[in-house]
Length: 384
Image 1 (cartoon, one colour):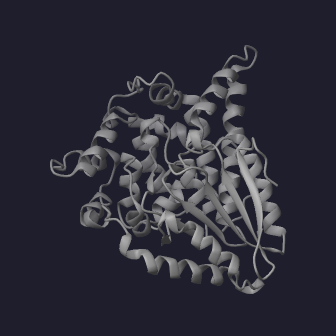
Image 2 (cartoon, rainbow, N blue to C red; image 1 turned 120 degrees about the vertical axis):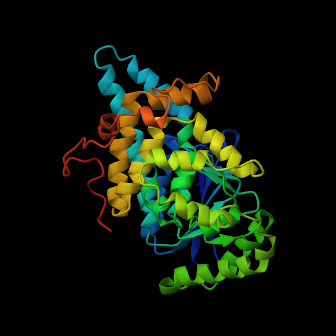
């Protein structure tokens, strides 16, 4: 089932009791397994096939190399595709919009499939897990982090916003955590991921082979698949929990709870920026990222979390598809990618210089309904 040049490798491992484990590995290690459309179009049908296969007990999703599970969507490829589409002289705007819509529609369908998967999906979140990588990981039924896990939603730096279901899972965190991570793109580790409901278990990376051996030796039963995997993961978590690194979120929870009480984005940004972080490298770095980030993104983060708080998962993905398409149309996203990933001058020319300068009408534009409910490309996602 594997191919030497495949960007995702699939395998089926036969357990001692006759069930199989579906194993999917992202293989673009040199690009930190950044997610592109080709990978999405391989993963989606294979996951659907495994979901229907009565012999598959569970799915194991990981990334090749030691550095990353998945460092996000392949925004460089996306940028180039959008630039190419813009050269369509007859219909540049239409080609441009369709290129964006195609990628995000298929990415969010994959993320939703993982969230609603009928069988257990174990996601091995080793190393860097950012953006689109977190979209894959957040929906897993069994999410494992390791001693090297570095997790972030860094879209403030590229003029996008925390998509891939961020409107949903950032709202499931303790008070203020989701807003802070969205506004600052701050990195969190394994302890923070467990605390903020982004992960379920801690297992050191060098225990991965031992875990696989245990999975293959397990007595899988059709009506106990989730329970069996949970029991195994619990055992490994309990065995290794003493190696868990110290996190940052729990130590700042009172401060984050106060952040959650800020009534608008200007207040929230000022609250973060005016906090004394002289002796706190983690917070100081977060402040710097927020200062250099897109003021429009800051508004989008605040508004998406406000709106997403009362939305189902399906509704969040539907809202985000429109938001993502509007981000590409507006130009802030392209400028952010250019400055960070293409020219690498780290000098993005944001449309506005501060959150105070962003007009309400601009933010309203991003949240406009682009389709009627029946015509929405994600209308088929079930209400949950």
